[in-house]
Amino acid sequence: MSGVIVLSGPRTGSSAVGGLLDKLVFMGKSFQVADASNPTGYFEDLRFQYWNKELIGTHYGSGKIVTKISGDMLKKLHGFVRWNETHHKFWGVKDPRFAWTFAAALPTILKASPKLGVIFHTRAIEDAAKSLAKHSEIAYNGTKRMSYVQALDMQLAWDNALGSAIDTAIGADLHAYATDYDTLVAETPEIVHELVQFIRQIYPQFEPSDSSIAAAIRFIEDRHGKRN
Image: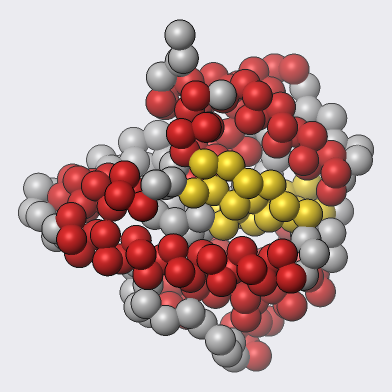
């Protein structure tokens, strides 16, 4: 049994990665519901999302990387991962908040899932900040909550946390795959097939059906437009 964690930031297209993975592997028991700012869904397992929110204390993060986690919180995390391992041959988790908690959480995750892999997903910081400022207004019923400058500052802080999480994953010699928003949209079939091969590196018995692969490709093309 094995799994993969998507490490990313907000408004980077990580929900697109979560959605395509959901066509291929188990991604969660119960997801955050879709809303006006993300109408096709977030694909964030609420167990892990609530766990991360409790640690970072805010919706988007305090700007401080979590370095210490209580025993009770680690016990919860271990239980979530073990449940996935017990009930599914391969599983995935996507929550951008892991950028803030991943380094401190990794030893516990590896105890429950030694064959863990990670997917690094990024987007140009300026583009992600523009999207965050735009969609923070949509999400809060038309009341602008975040300027572009505020969104850019937050994205820069998140990018720093993500870099630390990526360094932790590389230092632990985890199986890793990197992609970005522009490449995902421009080369969707190729990225989906590469992800299938990446999962096979972790779990060689992984054999998704042709229809599942087609559904993963179609999910991205329907969400972001099919290339000409």
